[in-house]
Image (cartoon, rainbow, N blue to C red; front, side, top):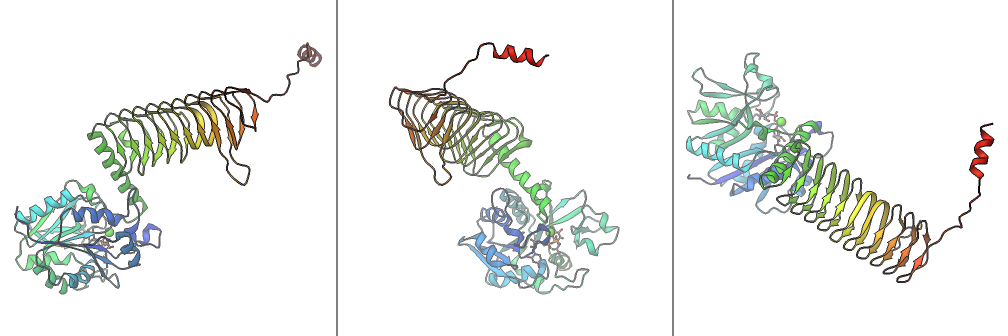
Length: 464
Ligand code: UD1
Ligand code: CA
């Protein structure tokens, strides 16, 4: 399809008081990035000649969020006098531009580039001067209503506050996305007035102006109205985030990941999961997390900035952050794996185990109720239930070194800095403060006292 040059104006001057923040609304973060960056990404995929972002309230923050994106320019709207005035502020930057101008809102992050491409194709096919996207709203509330003649021709857009009770019943609404020929847009915007209920310059009035001039106007109905969701308050933001998670989850499913309950799977953009991995219910994958082929995340897990190796099993109720879990490891249920935990293949971490900066070599087992912090543990060592690396004296952190093939008996305290060398055994209940040499047995244990018949004596005495 022939495409004439394209410029994009993104309206982002609004304050967004209802977000409960003093920051410009468009820099509000979704699960992955600020609202405006979503819009810019979709916009950039259309390969426009120019992108102009209209800023207002605290514009420097918006400019920071957009960053050094070289093809983006900024226009400043001093006072928020309405959407028509916002576009007017952008036009000086496009003085020499001839072609189609796409107008988008910085607070509508879900519009995809593929929808925008379809919209542009329909504009070209209709040979229109002005196209705009409409949708069917179940409760059209404050949206502008699309007015049509008896013959179904578009006549204009009327803002809800300016509508008659009959007009309010119209369910076709204006989405705020327009594609307009530059030679029509410039004079049409210059001619806008603010003679309406809000005393604002309404961009919507360019539609009736085009109709009056006999220009071709194309109202393009978008069935997937979810894409038009704008963020005006925190509830809208939660709906947008839900859609973003769902999109990411759907993408994983389509690539071959098994997701047991898509409705409770929360996947941030940038997370990578290999085909054949299984994600159970209530799983949240964040940041730079990578999950390997055949790994199983049973459910109720939060995994952030971590690598999960192939065929590893992350059992129920586990939190993993800034860690690397090797192939065929088993972690959880109820484990807390904190930053700097590096597990080689086939490590087994059981219930109620916490690790932090713990480098565990292949085949290490810590199956129950243990804290392993600031330590290195050699191949195939077994850490008994209730073992604690005492890594902190209230001032500083210290390292524990455990060799390979070591057996640490249950309920042992390893008071760092301390080393237990290869092949050594530590008896249950010990408090180890000195290094244990290779292949030695070490234990600290009070002598057991046993008094014959004491229990029977007490029982009989108390029952009298
Ligand atoms: C606008 C449309 C309405 C449509 C609705 C869809 C007008 C007059 N009405 O209404 O028909 O159904 O969008 O969401 O256009 N902005 C500026 N400067 C301003 C005013 C707004 O940059 O002076 C920006 C806002 O930051 C926002 C966008 O323009 O991103 C839309 O403004 P908003 O006030 O939300 O428009 P609505 O009243 O919702
Ligand atoms: Ca709005």
